[in-house]
Amino acid sequence: SESSFLLGNAQIVDWPVVYSNDGFCKLSGYHRADVMQKSSTCSFMYGELTDKKTIEKVRQTFDNYESNCFEILLYKKNRTPVWFYMQIAPIRNEHEKVVLFLCTFKDITLFKQPIEDDSTKGWTKFARLTRALTNSRSVLQQLTPMNKAEVVHKHSRLAEVLQLGSDILPQYKQEAPKTPPHIILHYCAFKTTWDWVILILTFYTAIMVPYNVSFKTKQNNIAWLVLDSVVDVIFLVDIVLNFHTTFVGPGGEVISDPKLIRMNYLKTWFVIDLLSCLPYDIINAFENVDEGISSLFSSLKVVRLLRLGRVARKLDHYLEYGAAVLVLLVCVFGLVAHWLACIWYSIGDYEVIDEVTNTIKTDSWLYQLALSIGTPYRYNTTGSGQWEGGPSKDSLYISSLYFTMTSLTTIGFGNIAPTTDGEKIFSVAMMMVGSLLYATIFGNVTTIFQQMYANTNRYHEMLNNVRDFLKLYQVPKGLSERVMDYIVSTWSMSKGIDTEKVLSICPKDMRADICVHLNRKVFNEHPAFRLASDGCLRALAVEFQTIHCAPGDLIYHAGESVDALCFVVSGSLEVIQDDEVVAILG
Image (tube, rainbow, N blue to C red; front, side, top):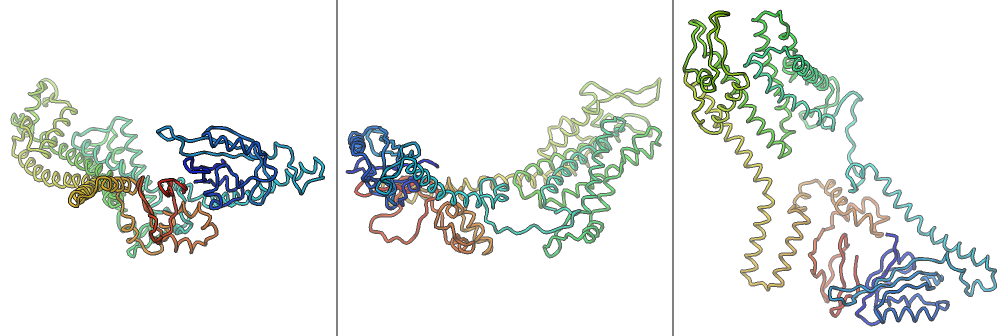
């Protein structure tokens, strides 16, 4: 960005300049339009103090297509003499033919003897040196205000830069609603993260509670007891946070009044949330608790499944993301299979032993499983007089889950089959639920994948239509290739998004803000807009249209009427006359 250079066409007489960067314009004082088509030897900057031998060496370097460097005294536009270190380098194409000259310039006036011209004749050496230094400092001061303005401009938009990386948003942003210090906005980053934590813990509860109730696991394990207690505390904290979280009112407004928030929560979800947070595990963990009370508290743990209400009331928030929907659907399917597996085991455990006659039912699926895996039930005649043995709890759960999964997704394989009346009734109900669940979940999964590939399908459909059109009207091969290149490159830039369609949805004020953001590179970098007001930029931005041009495309032909003003945001354009490049536009 600090370099100063020219590009000259090596195939035209006198090597005219086709491109001049901003650094050279600042250094020489010439505008780009003044430099274009002048000789790359910089003969327009020669003066009476320019050394004739150096001029001749520069000319020979261009004539012989050589690389060389010189210290040469040139004159700026205001006719101020300046010493330059000039480097010349030929640029060759793939056929090793020189097509361009690159000329770079560095100001070395401070390292040279003070320049003696008509205005300094008779001055002492010290006076001439002082003048040279003063001139150099004045040049630096001319460049400084622009740099300061750029720094201030960037600093004033620091907040937007921090929020969106290098993309600078317009300065027109709606202020966040002002809330009391102890009130949390329901859409802030903290609350969003907290909601996802609650979602994960809710699924943990939905998995562990049915398992503990069905398999009658006494929570004597201190680690599990501590973990469940921590989960209970987190849900209690969530109740406290809900008393301090804004909500959307009937009219779409954000309610931040603490009294209204509390009344709304007490009327809606408070009772359910409180019932789901009671510490049933701690009461059930004591050894001296009566068996009937212990069973009661074990059954009451099912109340914790009411925590799923927290997911239900925030379902619209989770459904904003396709990947989240996919994960939630798979989790729901697995969760239902888990619940049904626990119920399936409970039915088998209740029916396998006839408590009246104290005999075992040989047609129960638990008895058949025990025989097949070699862990049969045994009657303890010497001790308690109860039935013992049978499969382990892990094996029982895995077998139950296997049966419910096969019943939900298919019709089962028969290796685990219902035999008693209770098991058959449950299996019929499970198949009815499974068919509905299977159709709902996997139908939604199909829809999600179709949405994910909708743009790709639209792209291929468009390409096929264009190919058919080109074939039907026998468009020449060269033009056909240009059309296909344009479509492919435009799609890769826009990703198939119809900007006009999106903008048409937004209101006028929002549309102007988006357009200012889309055209920020032009507004920030082009000097024409440096002093423009916000209102002016907003009015202009709405009229701008972004056009993507493929390599080799002609923007304007000679003789055409120019009906638009173009700003090059990225890439470069060539101005061609008689098959020769006469200018390069950046």
